[in-house]
Structure formats: structure tokens, C-alpha cells
Image (cartoon, rainbow, N blue to C red; front, side):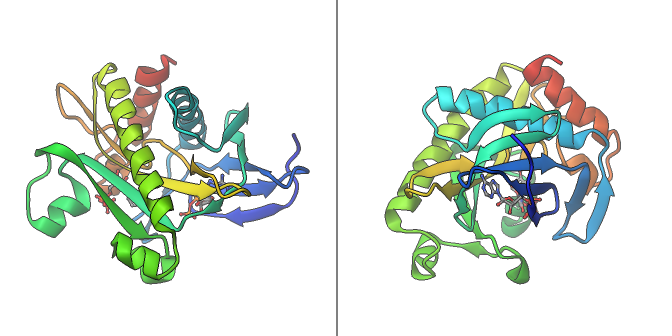
Length: 236
Ligand code: ADP
Ligand code: UDP
């Protein structure tokens, strides 16, 4: 499969057209941003790790009954995926308090919840991705009630599956962000990526951070943390 013209360049990935109108190629970059793009940097090797880890997890999720955009890994940092129209909601699941949850509600990080939580942010850079509830999302025609029901069901399924998969590697799944999209026939599938850029991973014993928080908070050993996550999950 050949890359044709670039359709989009985001903060972490580029998207290219292919000869098949239903397929695109995503190319993962080593660029890293945080705090709404204010902090910029490079995490050497990140593109390859995120590509490989995301594909590895999406293949497993397909097996567990969650439809995804994944089609075929082309090389270290490029993958063919089904082209979707992205539902402009960031779907965030949390198992343990951290990040904006801790800040918003004034609680320390690391409190395990009795049940996972879900929230949505409106994917809109001009508005800085504000928190949004499902009524507002429907009012704005971002998604239908049926799409939101389906997205929630898949998101909790992804959480159950990932949490167990990671615990077996000695990692706690603290929280993560998912994006969903619509295929041409309207079917909802999991899209974008699942990686240390989009999840919080803590070592189950030491609670050491093994994700993008090392970059956001200048904790050092950023590259090592990404490599360690790939090694634990994929054994390489
Ligand atoms: P951002 O746009 O936030 O900077 P990226 O750099 O990751 O993010 O860019 C990738 C873009 O591709 C995102 O806007 C994402 O929503 C979109 N995307 C992810 N998966 C697909 C897909 N299967 N089809 C079309 N677009 C996708
Ligand atoms: N997240 C993401 N992209 C975003 C916002 C959040 O991938 O634009 C992920 C983030 O990595 C974390 C989870 O979603 O795993 C929850 O993030 P939070 O709301 O705590 O925001 P943050 O602390 O990143 O500002």
C-alpha cells in the first residue's frame, strides 16, 4: 500500500490518503506536546513504540470483540487504518485519581475508584478541548444517543481488557483517552491510538510513572519509560 497526498498533520501523527478511499496511512512522529501545545519536545523512538503498541493492543481488542480501525502495520512507524470520520469527543476513562481529575476536585493522585469513571471532552483546539456532557454533545450534533451508548459500552470494554492485560505485566492502568470514528456505513469503531501518550501507566509495585507524564512533568528517563512499556507488553 502506497502513501499518496498528506491529508492532515497533527501533533503526534500524519495522515495520508491511499488509492483506496476507505483506507488511510497514519505515520507516527517522535514529536511530543503537552499543556495544550505550549510545551514542545521530542521523545526519541516514541513514534515506533506508539505505533507498535497501539497496533498490538488493537489487534487484541478486535479479538475481544471491540471493532477498531486497525488494518495492517506497514513498518516501524506507519500503519494502514480504516478511514473514519472522527466523533469529536475525547473519551476518558479513569480507574485511579490523577491529572485533571485531581486538580479539578482537589484530591491527591493515586486514589483507586470503586468503579471506573467516564467523561468526554469536546475535541476542539480553538476551545481548548472543554469538558462536555452527553446532552450537550447531542445538542451540538457531535454524536447521537445511540452512538454515545455504543461508545460508552466499548470504552468500558476496552478498560476491562486493558486493565487485566497490563496488570499481568505489573502495570496499573490509571486513566486513558480514546477516540472513536464512523465508517462510511456509520458503524462506530475505536480509532486513533492507545499508547503511553494517551494513557497513564504506573508500575504496580513502585508506582513509578511509565508514560507521557515523565515528559509533561520533566521527570527524566522519558525514552526509557516508553521502551519499558513496550518491553513489558510486547516483550521487545
Ligand atoms: P492531533 O490532531 O490531536 O494533533 P494526532 O497528531 O494524533 O492528533 O493526529 C492524528 C489525527 O488523525 C487526529 O486528529 C485523529 O483524530 C485522526 N484519526 C485517528 N484515527 C483516524 C482514522 N482511522 N481515520 C481518520 N482520522 C483518524
Ligand atoms: N489525554 C490525552 N489527550 C488529551 C487529554 C488527555 O491522551 O488531549 C489522556 C492523558 O494522557 C491521560 C488521560 O487522558 O491518560 C486523562 O487526562 P487528564 O484529563 O487527567 O488531563 P491531563 O492531566 O493530561 O491534562
